[in-house]
Length: 241
Ligand SMILES: O=C(O)[C@H](O)[C@@H](O)[C@H](O)[C@H](O)COP(=O)(O)O
Image 1 (cartoon, rainbow, N blue to C red):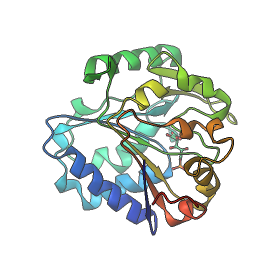
Image 2: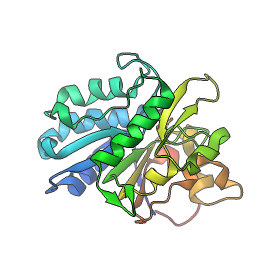
Image 3: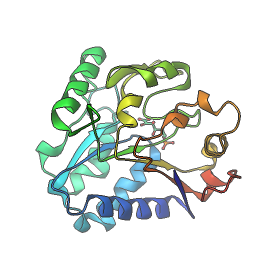
Image 4: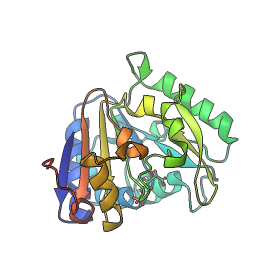
């Protein structure tokens, strides 16, 4: 695991963009799962504005790590956010976009998306393998849409599950642990002081850290990078960075 700390959100976005460009350059196909949330929004803005010409968009295939069960034009849709901040601004072929259909029946959609991953992605150790998965972390330590009260979903034998947001009751389709930890590279993008406590508990492995879904992210390749801003990193005490 590597922990990278930058001055602010924009720096995180710039450095992550460079990292993505390096990892994806010269690849015929690069399969990446995106996340929702506020940090990716800034990353998409920076990527589209400052680095768009450095990315070989025809090789990039976009997927999602989770999606809210709403229509694609709903304000809560992660797909909609990505269209507004990235897809509409770059030259990516439409057939490279593999969205989770939040408007479908959640159970059927989790099954359909799990099967789509089986058919579209290369396999490693018998499971679909993303080249990269971007994850955020919520203030409660959730990641993708696996929340602490449903930690059992992390260990699901399926590629995707239907999760329930603890406060709103909103249903979401989420990748499960077996797919996340089978990725070649996993990048956490976490910013803001509200994340500092959970970041510290998870990175310093304090007692009880395993109750937070984000602490279970541990790709078999060991290629896990936390991109943090100074606010999110302010409480870390171990020598990770
Ligand atoms: O759809 C979502 O909500 C996410 O994929 C979720 O896991 C998100 O990444 C975290 O909640 C962090 O969100 P922020 O970046 O807004 O803190």
